[in-house]
Length: 399
Ligand SMILES: Cc1ncc(C[n+]2csc(CCOP(=O)(O)OP(=O)(O)O)c2C)c(N)n1
Ligand SMILES: [Mg+2]
Image 1 (tube, protein in one colour):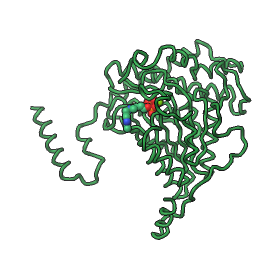
Image 2: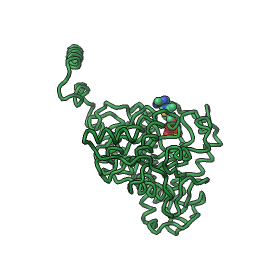
Image 3: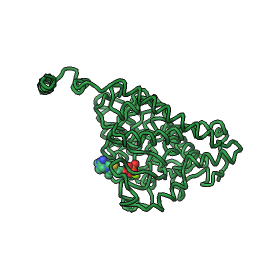
Image 4: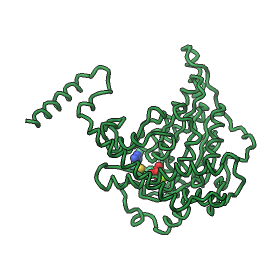
């Protein structure tokens, strides 16, 4: 297929030939290798380093990153409250997955690289600098929502960060992510694409199509599996007979990295290494972050423990809290976050959310007319007809 693309491009005088059939080259020795048996780890569960921390992880930097993680955690907590108050209708928390998403953000150049996220990636969005106001406006479907109430709540997009609109359909972001990466390569840019998905997504045909094509075309795409071990009520063993997810990368001709997704430093190091490998023109890479969703799947299954998983399992993973792990590391480094300081940080996030909710709600609800706008330059006849019908209904209702 690669040859066909190149041949047709040559005939049409189109874009330059793409490299065909990339082979997995041995990586430069950096300590970070693909296809490890165990997840790569820098900070143990007790907060002690299990290998030397790179010099960049100063206590100041770790405190800053901890603040990003805690902000996302408390954002989740507050948004669940909004949901329970009936001010929005859908929310999917990412609590427990902060190290994965904040760590991954570190390897992205916001507004330069392109991100095809999935629906649990608001922590990634926050870490990439998407304003909380935009996220809250989207969840509320207010006038200040960049998608103006036309998307399902909690399905964000952020133009400035090249953060593509989230789709509810599992894995259908994967083929277009590969397409984006192919375009980046054709155009000779130094951009890369980052595509995220859950463990459940790897069972979809779209996932295979996107991964296979990316491998065959050596597309500069970093695929990141946020393996939280559950796809609603299906656990990882029910999802695949493979020993893990990253091993599947071998079949697509790309390196597969395995990382402890609750270890911030490990995710940052592995994702940065993988992104640099992709950026250097080696083709795609897959990173599997092993983590856990400690909350419910969404408000559609509020009582997960009663139905498909045990309270003990959740407790075990709560004991591996990625935010607490950074706190333990800071304590070990002699820069602890005191309980009062932590409480103040939490209050500040709660205030921030409250302020942004008030600000977003004050912009009101989008007018019904906008559903017909921004789609076609010239509105087709059938839409003009529907708009006229709705207008008549609205005006009739007002009498
Ligand atoms: C094509 C498709 N099939 C089924 C669903 C229903 N569905 C919504 S979320 C989900 C689980 C996905 O799990 P995973 O990919 O592991 O992501 P997680 O929710 O665990 O973060 C399913 C099956 C869907 N949205 N789209
Ligand atoms: Mg999952």
